[in-house]
Image (tube, rainbow, N blue to C red; front, side, top):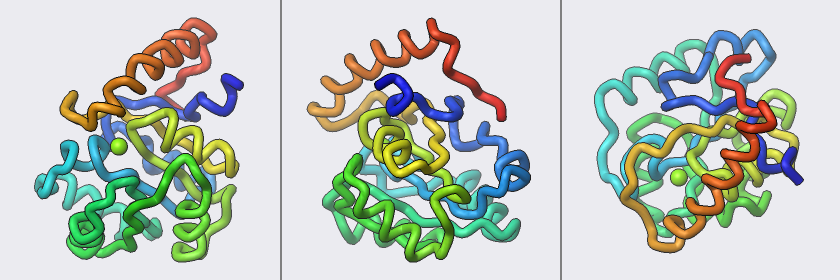
Length: 172
Ligand SMILES: [Mg+2]
């Protein structure tokens, strides 16, 4: 059970993701969560640093797709347009269907694709179930959906157990 909840990497923010090491490992596709991973919950903007970082990823040759559970379809699609990547709203993570649609879109395989997000029970669990490389990031803000706040209590417990078992790594 713990395996399914354990991210391969746990980092402070997207900027701490070891991009070159991922590339060397054969990762070519990146699936990003949106809320509290790239922008605040229901955020409408991406900061300049994020835009620049994404441009660098694309330049390096990564293929990227946003996969968000948010029902605000246009907001998610706007982010996709802004970043010049595909975007799938209303994803129902941890269910696999949206991830599979993303893989199809990216034309990458499970073994060569990473999922990056701030939630264990959606991003990490959903990614691990399919065998994707999962990266958990610390959420950008504490502001979020009330249901998510409840789940965070359980999430903190899981993180504590994973940490005690020395299963959390921030480097490849
Ligand atoms: Mg999120």
